[in-house]
Figure (tube, rainbow, N blue to C red):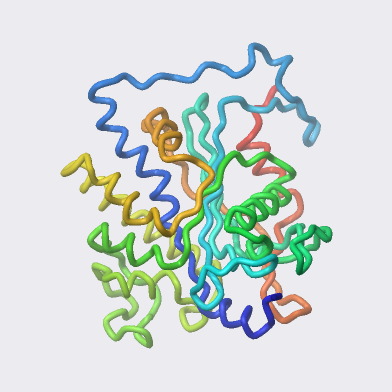
Length: 336
């Protein structure tokens, strides 16, 4: 059944993004790998190609670039399902309210992070009521997850939408968690401490602007889910809060890993039931072990403008050339 306007508006108001959960699931291995390093030296990957002549070249703004080798790319998704269920049909797979792309460069020894606004307009492949492809249409990228008969179908459709947005690049893997995971994550961490830049007292009297709180599970959900009644009510403000939570959570996780080598497994076990992923745990831990010492670059976003669409819902339009510029920096090396 197609998602009607009232359902969409309801979910826009409750917009929930689990940034910390997804990024932590991937980055936890980078921290846990410290324990592997005590017994084994980190092994570097070999080049996948033997010469520049075998690498893809592109001309961009009058300069020549060559495609990087030894990249691993992972799209992290936060899925808000209709009425809190996980019922899947051709057009009711929920919305991908959080999207973040990780680009792990094993040659340059860096990890880039691109947080994608859920309202970003991009070509999305649509399915008919019987699940058959019926072409593409420009719409909010979050809606891409609504098309598919299974969780895997929905995730793959969101991957395609992200690839469309980013000039057709290839995304190797995805990891998706549903909205229930944030309380579980916060619980396993034992809560995190943040200073509130906005007022949340309508939801919790203790959550006033300027307060420094060790968040309970319920407060963590308020902090990450609230939008319309907080600040100016924008998704950009909420995305900033997600980065604040993630930074605090990583500090907590580092401390717990020093205390117990088993903490990584505990976090995985706590979130496994809420996760759909195309990357196996062993593969991810292998990637993490190799990338433990890499520089994790600050989270990036694409510049652009927000506007109300003809349907009355918010849209984010990426600035001309901004996606291509980011792709050239993340996926290519300048040749001359």
